[in-house]
Image (cartoon, rainbow, N blue to C red; front, side):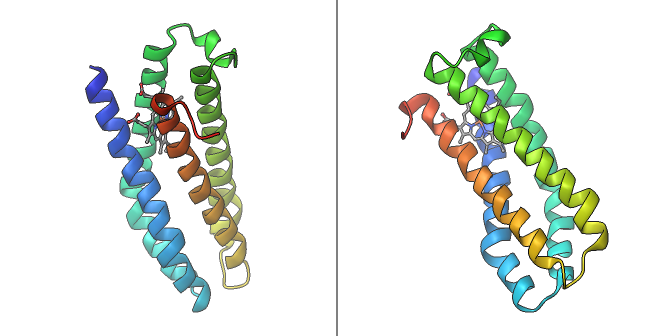
Length: 147
Ligand code: HEM
């Protein structure tokens, strides 16, 4: 079971982080340069179909993998060993991602124009940076970490 969970988790990571890198590094600069929210909305509507299921798979497989590493859920937040610090870190990143996405969806995207495009750009850069941190923390489980 473990290997299938890990396979799905890594597949989801390639989609979520890879998709955001494409968005932040290639699509976003083009949209900002030409002051065109449509370019972003077009990419988002396509990416959403794969990106949202990928994030849901990350959460399901991630929580399952965390349970396999530390079977007592309350001990996930003990912070007295590397695995619990990494699991807590991942859950904090997940919360930040959800908050940023909800804020963009509810507050920014309905009123998106070329004047508030920069505000959405900061959100995209933040979510992309967080998606990279997810991978850094994920790899740290087996390697012992980078810090
Ligand atoms: C978009 C979000 C996420 C990304 C991009 C991501 C990425 C990764 C990556 C690249 C690994 C390394 C796998 C390996 O060792 O080969 C990993 C491992 C792991 N992730 Fe995530 N992850 C995400 C969300 C989550 C969430 C929400 C949790 C829940 C707490 C989680 C829990 C874990 C656990 C426990 C491992 C260690 C697996 C093991 O080696 O046993 N991840 N993650």
